[in-house]
Image 1 (cartoon, one colour):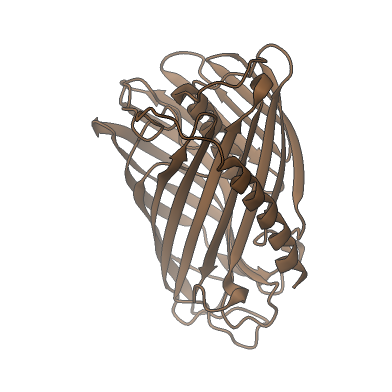
Image 2 (image 1 turned 180 degrees about the vertical axis):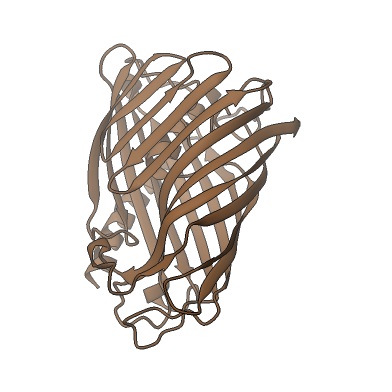
Length: 378
């Protein structure tokens, strides 16, 4: 109940801001963030800051441009983890043994993600997004330890619907946020116990040349810390080749030392790391190598403690190729090696030992196909 009340406070805060911002009159221009065509040579990795991002300088608020939007949405991808591109993707994990005698595990994941414009105003932009995920397991009788013999789910769903907004303020400042509701579960939307809630606010203000401060407040009931998380970071962009965000709980950087090479990195406390090095073979094709340390959280229906979450952690080394074979269509094909991976069900990472299921290291392959609408340059 306390978790639910805290989430409601955050949701009310963001919804209140959205209501106030909705009074902004819409722009008369038909050209918007979802209509700009891809320009050859745009090669930023998904989740990177837009190559057009610049630290703000004090100016009066004026009409929102596509460059402004690219900056805001690129920032949102880093801070909020939203990918605004319509895309369909899948990952297959080859069968490997677990630490339970006679039990192994293989699975595949499928995802559909897309965003859509809600309104575009003179200084305010609002967009919605939908994320749909499905995971099918072949688990051969796997059980979750210390749960009275509860079987590991055969299927998991991850459904999320959200609204994101940004508002351009006087003096080069920007206010933004996100509110989302979802149900990552084996029985989605069965009850309030399977509902996920997210609410975020961020505020960006110019400081010095090529520098700005970002302050934000973030809440999600899928995290192990059950309170709104405050944060602050300094954004520094001395050139189009280098962008750095340094703060708590996020550190990120994009560096392009030459037209061919680019390096990207993100660290989000306490246990999220994404690193990538890419080489551009042509304006529309690149090869890359990456390291990722990620996690996922689900609310298993019927769990003994409503605060518990079925959690998965893994580290991955991957190689792949990304290309744009025609127009705005992109393809990402890759694969690699997943290791140090395990499932457990608890509300605290430090208590993972009791219900932990270890999975042997193994291979995976992945494929994504989508449309790059030029929201941020890639």
